[in-house]
Figure 1 (cartoon, rainbow, N blue to C red):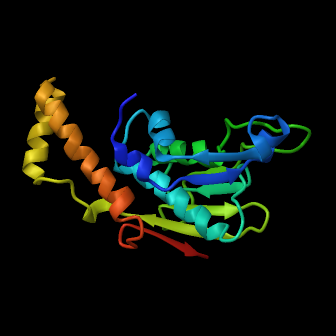
Figure 2 (tube, rainbow, N blue to C red):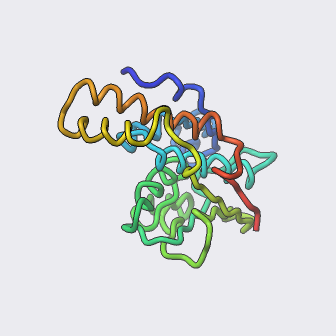
Length: 203
């Protein structure tokens, strides 16, 4: 499987999953997610998928500064409805990493490890997403705005290539893909600590 090599340079997310430990899925319940995992799950790499990954990374760093994040113990809230804009795409990426779901998640084992009811939409928040630890109720708002990050090349060139790519032009598909991923790389690598792009605020 071939993919842009910068995926391997994106900071990984490591969590402790008590359910995985009990079921023997991962030694000591430790799971590591990388950006490639999110791309595989979503089926594509774009600023939205990149943003969802970064929001999760930043939120978990803020909520668990000295300990490993606990998968299945994090509630995630969104201002938008689940079918509005790209909120569904973002939610799927975050769910894959944190285990949080609204209704469809695991119902639990012996009264423990439930993953449903850990995600809510259409909430009264101004952030891109709000992450809350279920053990301490500590919350962090995460704001994501990639509008200041542009791809290599000018917008008109990118629009032209996209139009040709959508018509099946093989050369345009190749060139457009490279240009598209150049923006994703800038978001994930070059602007990972740029608070104009991604910022977490404890509340």
